[in-house]
Image (tube, one colour):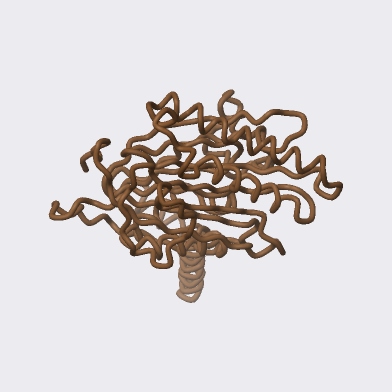
Length: 351
């Protein structure tokens, strides 16, 4: 696939959904999207099949995962997305802000710091929300690039139908630090018991927000995925990739299938998914059809291959055991002691 031309707008589809999960009673996740920042529209499209053209000020995707007792987490995540909305109102996005990647990075960093300060201010003002905080991941789609800022363990992935899924953000978490230091192999990170401990967030009274930033060129057919850890703590990356590989031609189905996959595995947390797919140019050679893979994952299906192997092995063992017993009994019935029968077999086959 060819890279999009950074000097010309591209077309895209958008899908988003949030779910309280199967355990929690309230949803502390928040998200907001704008398909056209120049128009000041912050509404989720009713039809996921709508094709949008990227405007001259771009589009914005924001996901936040709140933390805290009672409704505190929900308040913190809402403050975070509202602050980003304010920073990216049409009148505030100037040519100076968007002149290069350094200026964009600086401005997005300022937006996250402002959200952090707004949450801390609210915590001081209200007694019941002293311990609230939130993670944040936001992507500004502008001139063929995704400019992504994040703080915490809410993630951004980039899915390419040919090369697959790649995590483009790095979690600010205790487990990620173990991996980075070489004390934990990456393949053991998913099941680590402390995978929920984060090292950076917004609203922490002891630390200032310290977000990271990455700038990625977008290609035709790729899908940018933003999510809370309610998705990636339930589905492994290869499972997320399998879902997207099977449903990438329908952004609505892809969104719903990812959410359902997390719920099928227990839905232990709130789960939020925001997808943006760069539409291929018209009249181009279609993508080669990819091998389809299973898109619904449950613990039962994960363990099924192991159980099959155990059942097959056990069945074969009992068949052999019954055959041996029948053979010995027939030997006794023919008047031939079973020990002599074994010796005879040994001499005929081994020697």
